[in-house]
Length: 284
Image (cartoon, rainbow, N blue to C red; front, side, top):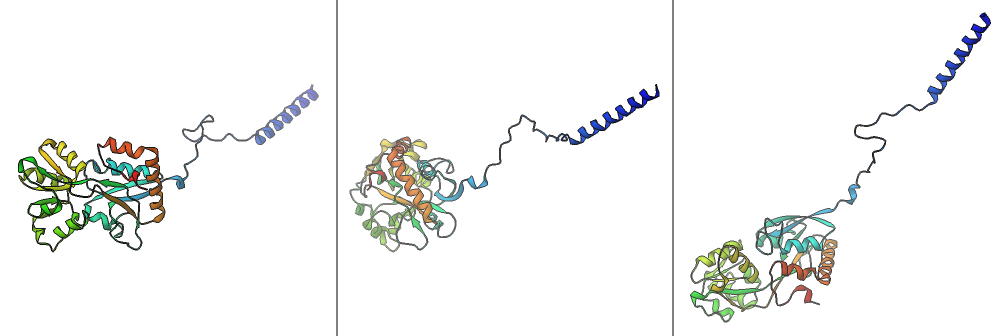
């Protein structure tokens, strides 16, 4: 009987040793992180380098239909956004007069709606990206005859900042800072205010892009059949964008060409009710 007990005790001791060895060799269960189970799909972190580069874009104050709702919409906003799809655009609004120097003064990476009067070192200009159809507009009730630029000399003229530089040599000579007729010439930074002043004045002449005038006038309850449009300026005034980096300028030009080729540029003009005798897409 004692032999049987010894054999049983030895067997139990051997079994215990075997089980202990198995427990040591088995991998310890790993603690699961909160919210993660064995079935959870782990998605890798996005590559920071894949984020779009941000560009600060100088753009005018709201001027319907070109810039609207604090530069969140408008044809200029849409053209720039679609021409530069690989960049994140941060629009910074400023008066028209400041747009021309915004890039040179490090206030922006690019500026929309500028003109190239001369070469400036370190500033790179795009192709034309938007065009305006300017006219002299009067009230029919005023009975004014405006058949040419010279006819503006004896009238109060409301226009935008630096317009005398952009409407041809005859207009510049008539209203340059030292010209006698400058006393009749008023530049208004906010074109909404420019249109407002026109409607409040019985006999003023407003010189402005037709699409801007029409949009602001209709939005403020005025009737367009009360005015006359005098086509005394060149058919269109073209505006460009200027850039700090030539590579971004090149990308912008390429984007413009794609918008023209796809017909998207023409669709934007129609969307914003802008009727032009010709567009940048017609240029070769």
